[in-house]
Amino acid sequence: MITETLLVFQRQMRILLRNPVWVMFGLTQPILYLVLFGPLLTEVRGGGLGGDDSWRIFVPGLLLQLAIFGAGFAGFGIIQELREGVIDRQRVTPARRLSLILGRTLQNMVTIGVQAVVLILVAIPFGLDPSWGGVLASIVLVCVLAIGISAASYAMGLILKDEDAFAPFIQGVSLPLLLLSGILLPMSLAPKWLETVSEVNPLTHVVDGARSLFRGDFGDGDVLLGAGIAIALSALLAIWGARVFQRQSA
Amino acid sequence: MPDSPLISVRGLARRFKTREGSVDAVRGIDFDVRADEIVGLLGPNGAGKTTTLRMLTTLLEPSSGSATVAGHDLATQPREVRRRIGYVAQVGAAPSAGTIVGEELVTQARLQGLSKTDAAARLRELAPSLTLEGLTGRALMELSGGQRRRFDIALRLMHNPSVVFLDEPTTGLDPQSRANLWDLVRSLRERTGVTILLTTHYLEEADALADRILVMDHGALIADDTSAALKARISGDVIHLTFDEGLEEAERIAREALTPRDLVTADGALNITVDEGAVAVAPLLRALDAGGLSPTSVNVSRPSLDDVFLTLTGRSLREEETAAA
Image (cartoon, rainbow over all chains, first blue to last red; front, top):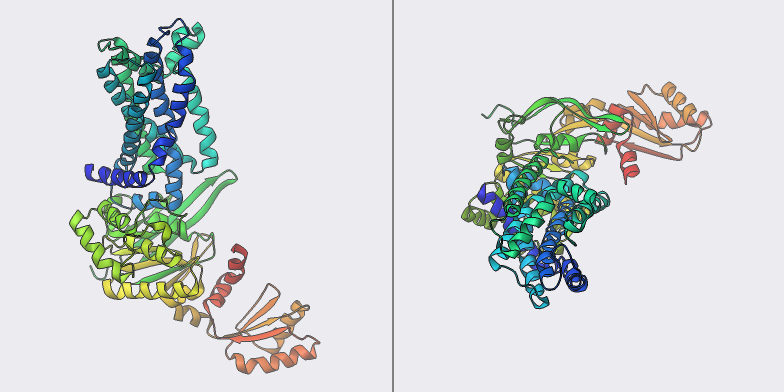
């Protein structure tokens, strides 16, 4: 199973590396937020914001945005693969269904890991001064989440089979998730009802965890909760994705 | 197990649920394919050919019925089936940038369970027989239609399957590439003894390639025989007459003038099956003339699979081909 997963991963990586421009393409949105929106937060007071501290709140949010959009859009790729016949071709092999989806999600994970590193490097000159151990742990957290989100995105791509159906779906899901996780501004600034709603969003806890990590509070309860949620959510989504891979038929 | 069939299908059915209700794409079919055979599944678009193939290749779960493929049960041992089959689907969309012929072949072989060295050796062995040598470093995007098709077939032969399924193998190919592909399929069987089940809606393709033809229509098998036996079923020549007007009158006259084995009107034309077409045509034309009818064209032909289909279903396969195109 490991061999099969690596085979699929290597194939996807080869294709990606021949067109590495896509890796940079996925970075444009978070970098635009960083450059054109981030500086506003240094002037805002409250919720831990203000001055260079703002970057320790804002950059973890951008990492999550990277995972939600970057991995969330993975399903577009599998719709193309479905059309090319690659998916059926691989499904007719004895390879395990979980390997077929995991190999793909590993490629998304690596892409998002690299993008996360670039994003943090870009944030340093703006005044980001985090706990570097926490940054490393946050990148791992985001990578774990990327596996689950891309697996779910692949599964939805297989179910919907069509870009015209997938695009509104992914927009409709990712934007509320993004806003409700307090990525742009911390939810502690929110009115009570909004804060309550955001508590239900598992991604809120992952962002909170990453923010604690950036501060260097490794022992914080948020960290444990965020990591636990990221791992559990990813595992569930990956298993669901594999089942869809098994079941879905054109 | 030389005598047990390599594919054995019993009561295989598939129902799809759509917004308008449920559609029976395949309605409980039975057939066997022996080792070494090339069997053609012939039928118009929408007859259920691809659905049948997708069930036999483990891609689609049957609604009911069972099948064994290459000695293993489809429902209970799908992985064992997958080890032993190759499924060449219909031509897909344009391949992604960044895919390379040789790499794709090796990856596919390795997913089938071959080791790295075995896969590389197999590539060297297989490429020349599919005239893909010199193309292994080429990007998939740069392949011509015929090359792409040969690559598609090579992909599914990397693991030396004992059964190969070909879905509409020559659709969209130019006549030259099509003839080449037919040669390839024949030589494949001769060299490797692989069993082949192919679907087609080209009569001449089934005729040229298949030892045996299964005719499929509306999800059911309506005939299962050799091409020669199917033609013998009509056992006679077909006089094909077209009329601008008076088709019904012409039909009546023809029935009186001849004792036709079969008579079918379709699409403004009269198809009369008689024992000896050349002998029957003169009295027929005289009778039509006496009735004041003159056909716009007359054609006498030896039976073709098109006629077989027409006899079996009352519809011409060619009409549907044009309609679909």
